[in-house]
Image 1 (cartoon, rainbow, N blue to C red):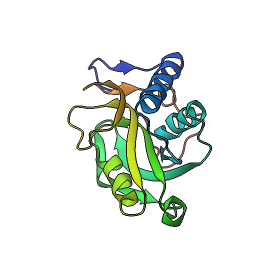
Image 2: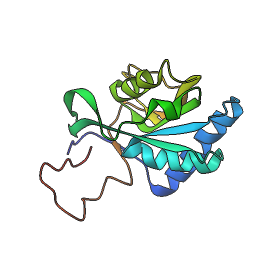
Image 3: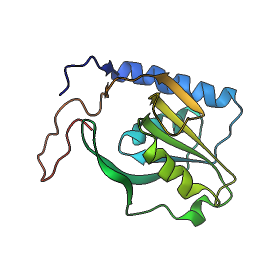
Image 4: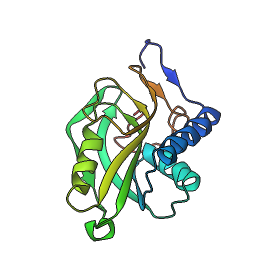
Length: 166
C-alpha cells in the first residue's frame, strides 16, 4: 500500500456519486438502450445507473488489466464470455466503469463496440488526468489512487494469484 493520500469513496458517497452521474447522463439527453459494465468495479456503477436511468438491459465485459497497485498487464485482455455483438447491434450503449485510470480498458471495450452500435459513450465515477479516454460522463476527477468501498476490505476467501487492492 502506498503512503500517498488516497481518494476515499464510501458506500454512502457512492450512492450520491452514482445518482449525480445518472443526472448528468439524463440531463444530456442520452437515452441508453444497454449499459455495458466493465467487471468488476463497473458492475456496481452499471447497476446503480440501470436503476436510476430505468435501463434493464445490462451486459458485462470481463476485462483483466490490473495485477496490483499501479501494476498492470502490458495490455488489457477481454475474458470470456465476450459480449455478443449481435446483442449490441444498432443500440445506444453506455459503458460503465468505476475509474478511467490509463483509459486502456475503456478504450478496449469502446473500440469493441464501435462499428456495431448506433452510439457508445462512457460513464465513470472517477477519471484520472492521464486517461487516454476522455469519458462523456464523469463524477469526479483525481490523480490519486482510489479506495473503493467494494475493494478496501480483504477478500473473505484466498485464491491462487489473488489480486488485492486493484
